[in-house]
Amino acid sequence: MLATGAAVTNVTALAQVDREKIYQWINELSSPETRENALLELSKKRESVPDLAPMLWHSCGTIAALLQEIVNIYPSINPPTLTAHQSNRVCNALALLQCVASHPETRSAFLTAHIPLFLYPFLHTVSKTRPFEYLRLTSLGVIGALVKTDEQEVINFLLTTEIIPLCLRIMESGSELSKTVATFILQKILLDDTGLAYICQTYERFSHVAMILGKMVLQLSKEPSARLLKHVVRCYLRLSDNLRAREALRQCLPDQLKDSTFAQVLKDDATTKRWLAQLVKNLQEGQVTDARGIPLAPQ
Image (cartoon, rainbow, N blue to C red):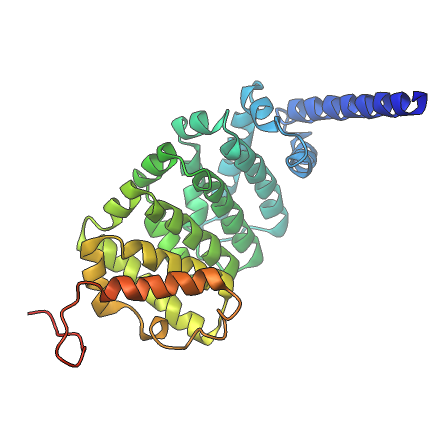
């Protein structure tokens, strides 16, 4: 029993020491001389300290220091001169912002302060070098953390910004990982009723989304990725919940989603196969056919 008590005391003491280090690193963020190491150490600890986000948000000068790290990188975007060292450093700052975006106590204030807008210049970049790819992916991770919460406030905020065209551009030309996160963000926006209505409100918005999804299907038929395909199919299925979009999809759904192109890729993915079958069923419902069951062209 005594041994157990001593062990608990040691664990508590260790936790206290760790806590003191966290406070020290947060304080060190305010000083340019100590900031880089503090960013690195805190980004490593973000998963193991549940209340790190409120500690960051409510400590004096911390968020300003993180935003300064982001703004300092802007001159390296155009012309694209970002180095691996610069990218790693700013991505540590972005990881801490993702922590703030994920936490229920700080998320609302994070949105009210419009902090995601500071990341949009990074999403505008097109350079294919690894530092830029890492920067885009980490920035998308912050937005992904916001939409993962399924909160109306998040979707309402994002719809007032340019996140949809930014995601669409990355979906068209990013790396597979960036495409996957960008498509996940679009999927989450579509799954919200306000988001679906927004995208289907005008033909221009819908057709832009449908065109990019169509290009992705074509690309996936040549270079399959089950994970990316899953998000693409879910986006199409959700679009088919809107009557006007459903009518348009009857004309423009890629043939590869109607035939057996992806049968091998999806052989072990029951969920995506079910979504795909539901999508095809949705597009067939209410369709006028001739005596042979062949769909008639709209008048």
